[in-house]
Length: 185
Picture 1 (cartoon, helix red, strand yellow):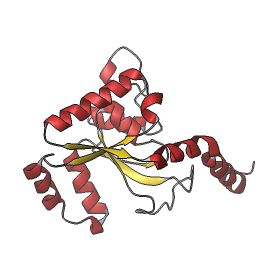
Picture 2: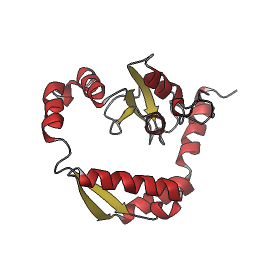
Picture 3: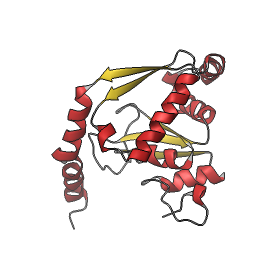
């Protein structure tokens, strides 16, 4: 496994299964990296390496050729070095997305002024490591100071979905079915 580029001599993980992609973007040996995301496989490496992730909506891009981990949760996405790279890539690969120049000019002119960010009231805050929760709250505070509007959301479905994901075990069931069907030995 590659090491997190932010920590020099201290060996720390750079994320999940797409960690090599995140590191290669950070060090400049790649501009775009495709990956699949089931439970954070591109989101976590992007967060830990300071790169950008774009997790598409389930079914937005076909899963043809992807070895499934969970047919219910898998989606194809990309990691890039910047939001601009992500916008250009997405517009090139997904024509329904529209004009990347117009999208980028909206970001540049509007910034985050008036951006609404929903903060679910959930047990996830209780389960998070205290330093992680504090860092997220600090980042949200900075966004609010810059003009974003934070909205507390009553979202009981979040906790229910999280419990279902952890308890139901859909991922091992679907992966097991794939392995039994495609690689029975």
